[in-house]
Amino acid sequence: MSGNVLIQGKRKSDRTIVEEVRTTNEGYIITHNNPEAEDAFGRVRVSNPFTVFDSKLITADKKELFWDESTVSGSGVTASTPTIGKPYVDILSTINTASNFVRQTFQRFNYQPGKSQLILMTGVLNLTGGGTGVQTYFGSLDDDNGIAFMYDEGTTKVVARSNDSGTPVDTETAQTDWNLDVMDGTGSPSNPSGILVDWTKAQIFVFDFQWLSVGRIRWGLEIGGILYYIHEQSQVNTSIIPWASTPNLPLRYQQITTGSSAASSARVICCSVISEGGADFTGTTQSEGTTGTINANTLGVFYALAGARLKDAHTGTTVSPVGVSVVALTKDPFEWQLRRNPTVAGSPTYADKADSALQTFVGDQAGNPSVNTVTGGTTIARGFGGSGQSDATSIRSKVILGEAIDGTKDTFVLCIRPLTVNMDAEGAMLWDEVV
Image (tube, rainbow, N blue to C red; front, side, top):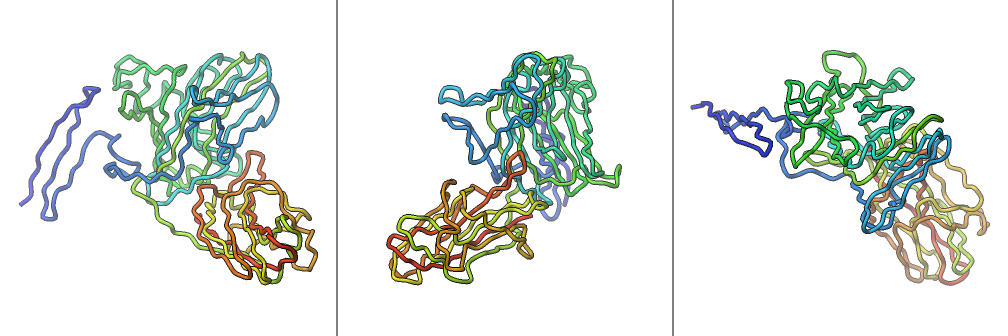
């Protein structure tokens, strides 16, 4: 037998939650009228979010392995350095100075169709100054696509950006036109929460979306432990084109000023990207390696075995290193390292790898040991091998391939250092690709 039962409850905001429990032959189905309890696909949120990325500034470190900062144009902008007592970065512009400053992740975060992607960002959208000529963006976006909160010369908006036409177009909705809650403190039907939001104070900015090219986007604020959705839009049954060319986007904090702007600032604090309902590996495992001997002749010098970087048209692909295999063909011990963005002598030529999102190169195999020596960069994995032996190692690294704000691609280079002289070696690196 089946039937219906109504259950009512209260939250701290005094908003009534009504849930309908429908008993069926298969069990119980619960529906409710509180949208913050549902993900972008209308599924009840439960406590198993899968964190794709998170960043907090709790030490005197800007997390430069994960974030790039650039004055894209103009001048007069500085970005503070966090301290233990002040875990945030302030973007500071000077009076009457045109500039475009961006703080953005190298990584673009993979969206998995059928999963709700939830993004949380904290900060102060308009800390000081503002007004004429000042625009600030907090969101998941680049120059071509994305979603954001925007402070626009005194008006706060939500933005959906699309490059489907070949030219980026922003759909901007001002606060007074938000279709769920205008947050103006009036308690009117258009402000069901009754909250007056203060954009000069820290906020938890919330975005979730179901891409599938045409799905729903929601913008929200979490205040007092309660998530309030303030605006939503959908392309379903209203459009024939996607709301963005790609859902695989970086996180960005951006401030733009003009030659007539007041000195202004915005505050960057913390963020997280979450795949709701888990995440599954649905990509491929690829590899690149030598096909001949690398002469590693000089004690203490690192020599390139193989390298990889993203192709221009594949910047949204998630590429994670998963393993290396290195062998000494002579009876010499060695150290191997996997480095991010080192300098490789001889300017090796990267070539497109078939059926892959990457371009790759292999070290010089023509018997010239000085061609592809390696210096600098950041070591993200390392190991040692014995005399005349091989070393095969799995790697688990949160540092993945991305690109800087100016389009410079990250590189991974596998290199080897002989612990004696005149070593011959070969090696390979392996990675996972998820589009």
